[in-house]
Structure formats: structure tokens, C-alpha cells
Length: 411
Image (cartoon, rainbow, N blue to C red):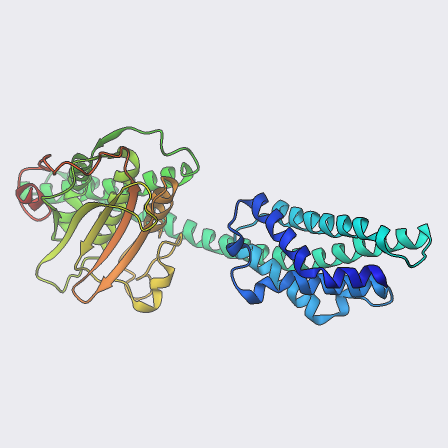
């Protein structure tokens, strides 16, 4: 059939038109719509399959294995790229529109006689072919969505169990210490130990609940927040975690050259507190000296955009098993839940750091070396002049009275 032959000969041009339209629609660079040459072959092959069906209506398009495979691969690709169902349906609407518009333009130039009924039948076969290919793509896409939802449901159930267990333990410890204090038959030193236990576990419970609250707020506009000097924010986080650090014999260090810039108080403190709390929790009891250090510097991103503040939290703790490093920053993930059941947690800390930094236009990642582990997060600078002046702010955390308070001396 002449229309089918015209479609075959114009398959590359039709693919380019489709690529331009879908790229403009989803605001995605054309090179990312189909990131490899193999994937770019999807549309010409689908167009050829549609042309064959138009020419031979007895041919069942979904019986063609290569066509089905390409359609399913497209569903997998769009799933990995974060397309939603509407965007996927819109993609095929655009695709079908391009093909129908093309046939409408070329039909008048075809000299072969045909009836109006035959033209309508041809249009119907075009519509049906696009619908069947769309069905294959969408079915595979939805199956992947279902798998993800099932996985998230299982992880959420596990998280609820872990959270309930942790809060129950914290409350039980607090209640037990309070009951012992009520007896009033202990020495001042023992009373201080019980009081310290209550304070430490209350703080841990507060941090856990605050993390849950902040996690529910990540979709809000994080840019509308109070800004304070970076060093002041870091010092406040160190002060809040002082008791927890002292209990585990961890020294918190704030670098003396922290940049004199302003940061979003809530977002910065949330990221830093989670990273510091993790470093304290996963400190290595086999080491005589346990420490975690906070550093920061201003840098220009690789794409030459706005200056950003890079914050590093480095420690000499247990680290992360190499086999599990790829899972870092995922919600509910805990690196040592199998090897060290004594370390409690919900696995939300790193995901909160990542989501908070991302919501501000920043990033989060980790670096592993033989002498320690570093976690990083970045935040775009609030003003272009931030980071130009030398660091001059010095805010003490607390009087140096033991482990965890050395940051006052270091500053």
C-alpha cells in the first residue's frame, strides 16, 4: 500500500518530529529522552510495525515479538526516568497525532485510486496499531509501578515495626530510670547516671519524632526559611548532640575555617544533625579515640552555576560495608542491621539528608577511604557574595568538660 510505503521511507523524519515534541513537552533534553542509540531505534521500529499493519490488516501487530519488546522497553525506560502515567499517555497521543498528520498530508499526492471507506479503514488501522503498542508499553510500565509500590509497602511495614521497637525501648529505658530515681536510695553519682540516661533517651526519641515530622514536610517550599551563620548552625547541632556523643566517647570537632556565610537554619541543621547522629551511633568501640569532624567550603559546581556550600562530615567509625554502599540514602535502609543488632534506628536519616538537600537544589553523597568515611551535602549559596570573605565567626558550643565538647576548644 502506498501510504505504508511513504511511512516507511519517512520513519526517521517522523521520529525526529516526535523527539522534538516530546522533549518540549516533558522539558527533558532530547539526548535524555533516548539516552542510547539502541533506545533511539525504538520509534523507527514501531513506525515500521505500524506501516506493516496498515498494509496488511490480517497481521496481528502484537504477535510481532520485536515490536512488543521495543514497546515494553519504552515502558521500562519511562519508568526509570520518572514519567507518570499521564506523560506516558500524552507521549503516545503526540506520536499518533504526528503519524495521522503525516498521512493526511501525503494522501493527496498518491495517485492510486481508493474509496473513502478504504481511507477510513486505513485511519482505523493506524489508530488501532498505536493503541496496541501503547497498551504494551503501559502494561509493562504499570507492572513496574506495582512492583515498586509492593516493595515500598513491605519496607513501610518493616519501618513501622522498627520505629515501634525503637520508641518502645526508649520509653522503657526512660520509665525504668525514672522509677529507680523515685526510690531515692542511690548516691549522687548514680542519680546523675540515671538522669543522664533519661536525658539521652529523651533526646533520641525527640530526634526520631522530629525526623518523621520533617520527612512529611519535604514537599513544602524549603526555601522559605530563616537563615543564620553556618558556624552558628553547626555549633547548635553539636550542642544538641553533646550528651549522645559523650555517652559513646565520641569527640565532635568543628573545623576552624568554616566559611562565614548564611545557611537555611532548618534545612542545614536537619542535614547536619542526621549525619552527626549517624557518626556517633556508628562509632567504632574498638578504637581508643573516636571522633567526627565537620568541615565546609564554598565551591563552584561543574556546570558553572551558582556557588554552593559543600559540607563534609568525616568520622573514623564502623564505616559502610562495600556491598551495601549502593543502597545508601534510600529510605529505611540500615547498613549494619544484620551485623550489629544492638544499633537501633529507622533508616531515615540519610534519606532525609538527601531529600532536604535536593529540595534546595543541592546534592548528597558519601566517600569511603581506609582512614575514615565522609558524608557530604551541598546547598546553593543564598547570595553571590557568600564565601568571598574569610571565616571570622567563632561560636563556642559549650564549656569543654569531656568527650563531645572538644569542639569549643577547637574553635
